[in-house]
Image (tube, rainbow, N blue to C red; front, side, top):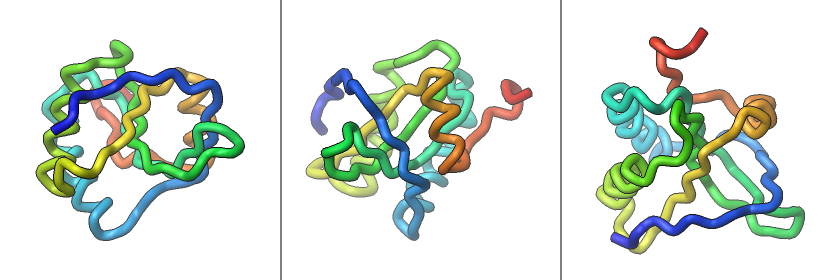
Length: 118
C-alpha cells in the first residue's frame, strides 16, 4: 500500500454522488469504520474536479471534528486496498464548512454521526 500524500488544491468542483455496486460495498465497509471512529461527522463519496480543466476523480469527502487525520486516512486506505487492490487509489478530502455546503448541494452524505448531527 502506498503511503498517503497530502496535496493542496486551489479549487474544487463537486459534481455529484458516486454510486454503483462496488461503491455501495465500499460505503458499507466505511460506514462500519466511521461508527467506531467518533471523529468523523459526515462522509460523502463524490465525483470531484480539482480545477476547471482537470479530469473527474472519485473522492471520499469527510467532515471531521478535528480536521485532517493521517491515522484515519491510513485506516481508510487499508479498507480501500483490501477491496480494490493496492494499485488503485482513493482521494480523501477533509472538508471545511464552505466546501461541505457546496458539496451538500449535489451529494448526500452516506454517513452522519448521530451523536454529532444537530
